[in-house]
Length: 163
Image (tube, rainbow, N blue to C red):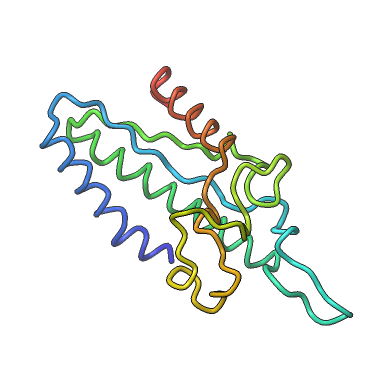
């Protein structure tokens, strides 16, 4: 995964930042990163039934998912740095610290885990065809209102300090 992130995603982000600058020469650009999505080893997403093996995410899977988020954040920081070195006013805002212990399974949980209550825009037959009868909301792994505030805090800090 790090190879794909660094060899494909990072250059694409860099190119996108240059394109934004080309269309908005006076804009100051802030690239917002992603925090790790799962806290507490994903404990709320794993269980065993009647002594059967673990169902859900293992701590190893959780570590891999969060490690991928960290690799992506590093590549995003690098893309912002590469672009800034060439004179484009761009900053990277990393919300990771603000979300520590508050992602899915966190306390308080500021990122949606499994959400079965559908919204008007959810299309369970399309989004989750195997669970058509019950559906899962597309809110899964997206910030709750408190998570949006954590992102806003990160953005405001970056605008205030440049970090």
